[in-house]
Image (cartoon, rainbow, N blue to C red; front, side, top):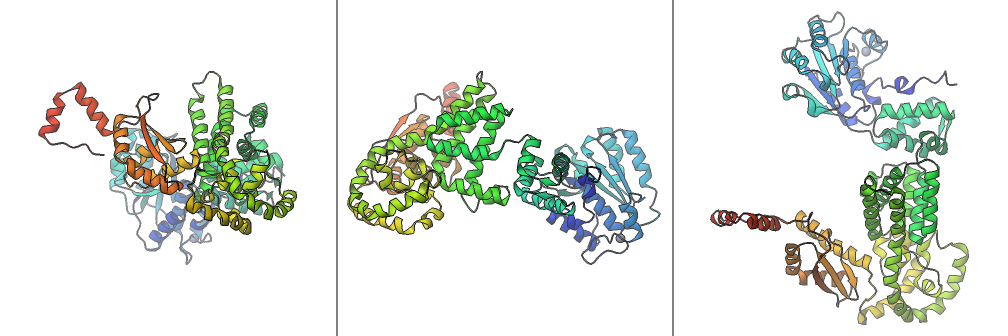
Length: 582
Ligand SMILES: [Zn+2]
């Protein structure tokens, strides 16, 4: 079986523009140029490795020499010229790999051959791969030919590093930028190859391969080959992660559930299990960060394309995203990212990661402690309602395990059972419906109405004391996002407000930040009062003494410091009537 399996990267190299994966707009342009006979003498193909630059150059050479173009502008693959190209015996194509042949002599050799006209076909095509590797002397030797090439000569220069190409070359070329191939495109193509080879595959398995290939089809195909030689005609997710030493994403899903449950013990045990399997701790941490990021982009239809996972996995992300409110994700991302940044310099790396896990388990915990006091108040309002619902509740207890479907548990149950609610519950119970996708609301429409009815009556007279710090943070972020000016927006978003009763405490990082916020104080208060439905919210702005203002210097701060060091600057500012620009 292994003998039969030819390296698919070579076997499935595209033969026409149509089968080039993931570069459709670029190949359409090239095809059109050939059709309308608008050919340039020099092309520069730029882009990462393995995305099809050389392949496209070869197809281009074949197509412009084809004696019988198809209606769609592709090479016919049947005429004498096409056949000679496909058999790799065409005299109309010359390839030079500048990575290994970068001397002046190599280029002189090539230049000499340029002046011999083609015997068959119309064009001679010269492909110079990794052209940025040419020595500067070689570049110069080449430049003259590039400036005045014979009619029949066409150059295609390919490079992974466009910035290393000297301007005199760039200005003489038509430039095509190849992009990384999307994971979904890679998966589709691997499926096609697998189908041709009678290999069965799991989507998750192909997703892992595509992700590992990082946008390079050539890599995807050779990883695929490797996996097939390892596990035969049935490519499963399990076989792929074992063979490629990839950490099973199931771990991350399980861990996030543990963070919700505040389950420190089990999250530490899972980490231990991961280490025992021989995985690197830092990979684990950055994988966890990516997982949070992936959940974040799964929350919204508009960012969903950024997820880049197979359909099945995307569904699992969506399901977890439903349970994760934004403030939790922001905080979790921050914690994981900080750990990642500190990892290299840490002396006790294992402890660092364990601390991260503990902190992640405490996100929900800390929001809960703030919330429970206000909730006992809340339940008294609802006691009337309980009797109506007890019937309903007992039915439900049987068919839903709380952990899997946390959002279906309602406020009354939470207060009655000593079991601690998770963040999703806390959020929804305190009116945080926005953070949860409609899916949950749809799931229990009747129940929601029942809860909401008595509440709306109360809300007209009562002030909502129920907001918690996470909601405050989100309201604060919303306030920041209402600014068009990026500087002001970032200034606000960079601060995390603290909650104390009805006080929103802001720790400014500098005096100018404090001044800026004080100026906007009443607007901020109004915004927060509105957003959190509590007219008693007040703002308290203090300077954060713990943090030295390193990162958040405003232009004003900088000027102040500069003039302190150099008072003459003041005259300068006054005389030219200079203004600080925000
Ligand atoms: Zn042909």
